[in-house]
Image (cartoon, rainbow, N blue to C red):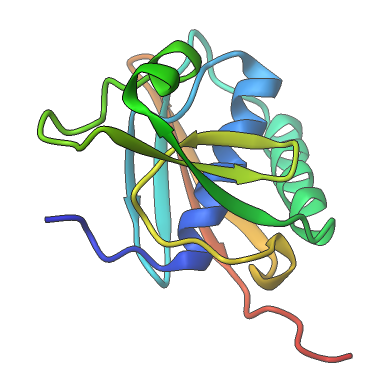
Length: 150
């Protein structure tokens, strides 16, 4: 049974993954624990990152959020999806159609979880802590409530 992810946190995870891969070439997180109040993602890294690197990642994620990009989905055949995406996390009993979540031009990947309809509804992303041990960078983060003033 799929875990009940919070749509804001889950979409923020997608954006964090895109920023981390673009910045460090580390790929998407290999492990994640996504909760409504706080979440964490683990990345394989060859080295620790600096506080400046962490601030830059946080700023880049918030830039995407503030861009208010649309979050859309499309269905691809398993064969089409296999040509474009890594499907190693896809359950063996998955059907013939793979759901692809697209966040503007920032990220696209197979996913079964719930997401927001636009990044502007996520709120402010804040990295609360990070650790590096045995080639694994763990990033812990929280979200503030979205700004509803307008």
